[in-house]
Amino acid sequence: DTEVTQTPKHLVMGMTNKKSLKCEQHMGHRAMYWYKQKAKKPPELMFVYSYEKLSINESVPSRFSPECPNSSLLNLHLHALQPEDSALYLCASSQILQGGFSKPQHFGDGTRLSIL
Amino acid sequence: AQKITQTQPGMFVQEKEAVTLDCTYDTSDQSYGLFWYKQPSSGEMIFLIYQGSYDEQNATEGRYSLNFQKARKSANLVISASQLGDSAMYFCAMREALHLIQGAQKLVFGQGTRLTINP
Image 1 (cartoon, rainbow over the protein chains, first blue to last red):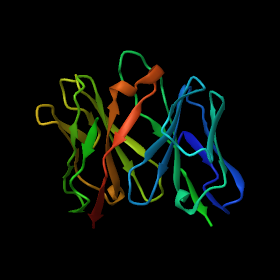
Image 2 (tube, rainbow over the protein chains, first blue to last red; image 1 turned 90 degrees about the vertical axis):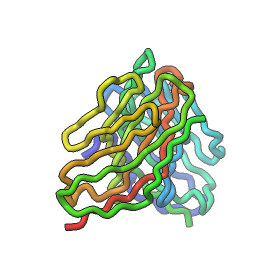
Image 3 (spheres, rainbow over the protein chains, first blue to last red; image 1 turned 30 degrees about the horizontal axis):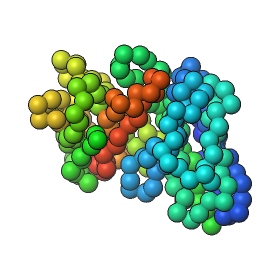
Image 4 (cartoon, chains in turn purple, brown; image 1 turned 90 degrees about the horizontal axis):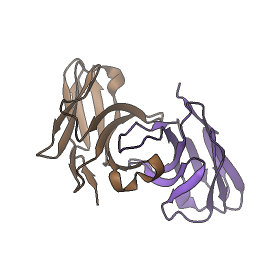
């Protein structure tokens, strides 16, 4: 079992639907991330939150809207998605450390999203 | 910009043999970090091992070790005594120092190597 919990595991939605992906961690991590991963490709970073504030947005289309309501939760709101948005969406979290020292990101199991 | 190259799209290894997965990187930073992740077919990304650019010794974690050759800019993952459960996709990743914004980190991933362990 992972320490980062993502729900739902699978989601099928039409292009006109509105849905949300949820991510929760209780490790006290203050950095949280959303990634998109297409089949047989590496994960691509979408958003980074540091101390509940958006610090990186990798030019993601506005039909994806992230939200970090508190230090344990991260949401990704979806609206008017396209078929090419079908992918595995991974959430991750990490400790925030100063001085350039790195701690690994901990990933959830992901949400497999299919757009009809 | 940083870049990670994994030249082995797929590898097939007999159970109990050791296996080396290649990773080379390109960066102009003096301070950087290298990670290896395992991704089974279930989708979860599992952290395996970390090597910092200033670490003098190669990192080891159980059956995993990292063969870090800084001058060659390579960070190969070595799995000893492979097991059937090691079959998965393996990603090498590097932390971009310039994007250590407020302590968060941006990872650059290689294309991955699919490892299959045969019984």
